[in-house]
Length: 272
Image (cartoon, rainbow, N blue to C red; front, side, top):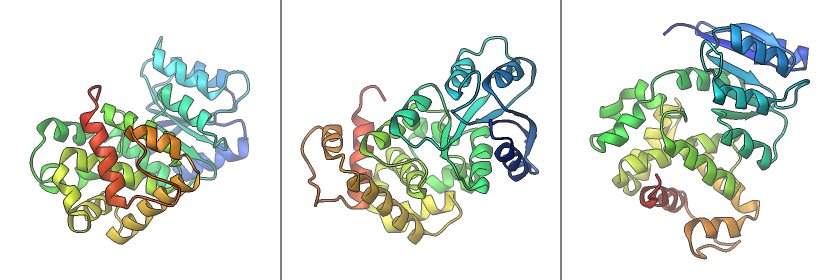
């Protein structure tokens, strides 16, 4: 795989420089740092860019304009993937960015090692879409370890967008570790529903292998993500999502119950 050509867009020169330094690696080449939206839009028309990492709040044109330009894809040598890294944490900001085509939304300050890993995975082919179409075989045997690690890219299958919308609706923030673990767990169960009956022996270890971590850390992070959602008090959204009043403020689902509910909804949704 050739180096990922990355353009960083940040009006904070110091922060942009720090991002460039931290993200430059054996597989990422920072080809430039734009300090406003107009400079970015001009570079998109003349440079071969794989990924743009942009702030939302920018002079001239904001990050949403960059997302819209990438979606239009006019007069560009290559349509780049757009990653947002912003201090704006409101759900409205996140939802709008995702609807306009953002691949990921990171909150500042962010773990740069995590960002670079996500970028690398997003530029690789996503084998999960093929696995979904096959609908058979052992997860590890079908995808392989490296294949499993690329399953967290969102640009190759509509399930990613649907999961993101569900998480936004119920109040699971994208910056916590449990968000990624929970998303991958749901995707695995959609692909192989019987895994929900073997959470500790198959599901947690499968997710852990994707992210090079332990099954116990996966379990704790998913539990934390669900607790965050319940603590935000969006029970009306949660109950509306599943079509009936299923939970109260004092009735949190187990990890398995929540994963099963979301996976079931995705599988029966006729638009999926």
